[in-house]
Length: 181
Image (cartoon, rainbow, N blue to C red; front, side, top):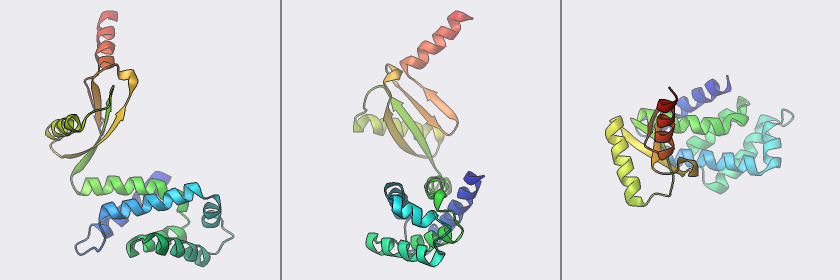
C-alpha cells in the first residue's frame, strides 16, 4: 500500500516538474528530495518533529521552511514537502524520491540498468557497456555500476526484469545444470 501511495505522489510531482515552463529540472528536484531525506535519516530530532502527531502542521511547515531556505530548495520542492507534511506522508519520503526518479525516467524514455562486474570497470569499459545496453534495449540507459566478487569474472546487467548474464559464475551455473540433468 505504501508503495502505491508513494508512486501517486511521485507521479504528481513528475507532472509538475516536467510540465512546459517548469522552473526546476528533474535532477535538481531529485537531489533536493534526497538531501532532505538524508537530513531525516541523520537527525532524530527532525524526524520526531515531522512524524509526531502532537506537533501541529504549521510548526512542521515552519521547520521545513527553515531547512529549505538554508539549503536553497526550489519552490516546487518546498510546496511538495508541505503537501507531504499535510497528508502525514513524511515517512514515505525516501520511497517517493525513488518512485519520482523512476517516473521521470519512464516519461523521458530512459531505463536503468544495474550492472555488476567482478572487477571495477574503467570509464572506457563503462561507456562500452552502456552503449551495448542502449542497443539491446532501444532506449537511453542509465547504468549503475557495482563490483560483486562472487561473479568470478565478466559482468551481468539487469534492465527491469530482464537479466543479461555474461559472468563466469552464470556460465558455471548453466554448465552445472546441464551436467546434472
